[in-house]
Image 1 (cartoon, rainbow, N blue to C red):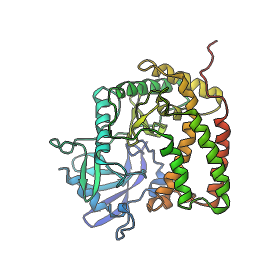
Image 2: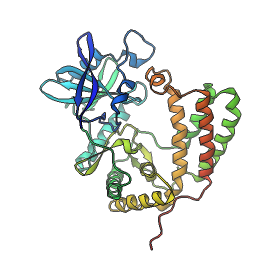
Image 3: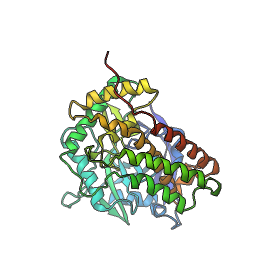
Image 4: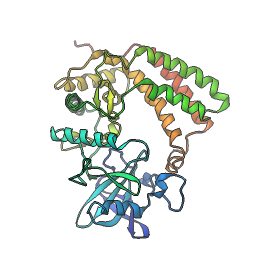
Length: 380
């Protein structure tokens, strides 16, 4: 089904917005875009130096793509990606490409190159992922280029739909292919990417919010108290322990980063690839009540173990990892608040109501941390 989405159609120095049907509402990084929300990811306005992305004008996007030897037809669709900037760019006499412009100063060149090489390594092992296109064949980093200070990569456009997490066959295949990713990843130890740790995703986030005065003064005491207890519980679970294999992971394997096509999952957006415990790539696929989560888990693990043994002890890390993701998300929004796209797209953030509800969520999550860990369902 085609949807009418605004396409930014430009000729040098002139950009207008028209409507043109596109086949899929996704940005090839797995971020599904409702047609009513495309305006939430606008092309930046020109004429200000407040944020680096303000310099990423439509002309700059076109020039970057054309610097690779591809001629654009000047059609640009801004896709729903916030950490980086991602655009569908029309190409003369060819299919559109996806251009991903990395957020300045987030990753180093070697870290991005390692992400690209890992994705290509998976693709070469016939795992359904979307590796970047080669830009400079003779370069040491052939899939990464730089234009006017922005590192960028190009990808083929590939559509798909979200996996159905209430479909046991979908869950089984998700587990199977994640098991393959992890099995191949064991032969691809990361040298430059980060390693999962509680400080980065937990205590550093709390400190950032407090030091930069994001928490309202009347809520600071409650926030400090609940996060202190949370971090004590998480530290006690010791997710960095050698008891859990620390392997190369997708890192952000939520359903939005999986496109279902050709009767199997395709994994996209390896921007957060890191070293950590296997359960990090599995727990975000679980939802619903205890019974449903156990049934889902059984299907995922059954598929996973066709290629990788699964350490059941890692199930005790699910709630700690869920809690760290929740805490990291709030700090991520705070760290990006000077990016003009964020106040537009997340207007509910950084209000007294938001922080009050966040503290309540932390308290609820603290209770979950103290509950028994999820277990596999009992076989009759």
